[in-house]
Amino acid sequence: MLTHAGSGHPGGSLSVIDVLTALYFGRLRHDPKRPDWPDRDRVVLSKGHAVPALYTVMARAGYFPESQLVTLRKLGSPLQGHPDRTALPGIEAATGSLGQGLSISLGLALGLRMRKSPARVYCILGDGETQEGQVWEAAMSAPKLGQPAHGLDNLTVILDYNKIQLDNFVAKVLDLEPVLAKWRAFGWAVIEIDGHDFDQIDKALDQAEATVGPVIVVAHTVKGKGVSFMENDPEWHGKSPKPAEAVTAIREILGVAGAGWDDYLAKTPATRAIVDELRALEKK
Image 1 (tube, one colour):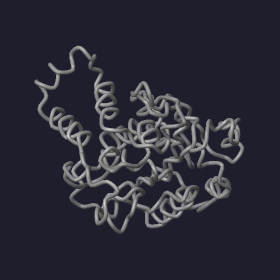
Image 2 (image 1 turned 180 degrees about the vertical axis):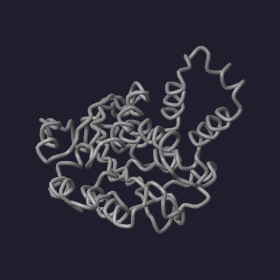
Image 3 (image 1 turned 45 degrees about the vertical axis):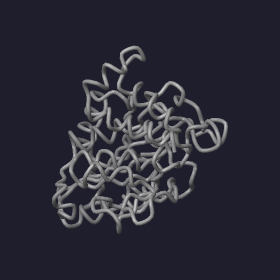
């Protein structure tokens, strides 16, 4: 997607993809055929630049054809570079102006509680994003909002803690630590996990559902997860891979050794079609 677009954010998309996969294919109450179902669970991707990951799981879930993914960032495409709720059914909030998603999520969660809906709200924050003051205003408000009759027991925040932001490592720009202690001090229940371990993600979400009051899951992740030349490298925050780099990245994510790549492609037509398309791009 990013190679076709010629721009975008691979690092943060790969760090959050496991969390989104766990949500959409094992957790959410949702119906792609009824994206406006009133009692659906809501996902607010506050770190909106990682929307390629969200588009990927939405397409696989059936919100739109997977063939449409390559229109990312193209004029007229509903798959804009940041989420646009007016363009794509299933997107809950226009985000990407960092720091606003938690405030939006508080409003959604309170509205759902007031009308006694069983729906939950999942807000995904970036770590560099939480340097924004609006995040902490919302964090301070959430445990008190709606009390005593409509407390936000339906709100789960997931921090994609990959420790890299646009300019550099988070600790070098404006260190967030002590992250756990800060959120606890604001009255949140805090759960710490490996954000690439599906068992840990599922258990944390179970625990969040059983907890009274808002919960934050601090998910330790790796920027550029699965691609050797992208992992933990700030350069890949907002740079699209060239076609040859994309092919290498796909092979590494699939876990196929270089020597067995041609045999793998011969047996996997869908992957072969993607690789052939990327190689054709390289020749243009």
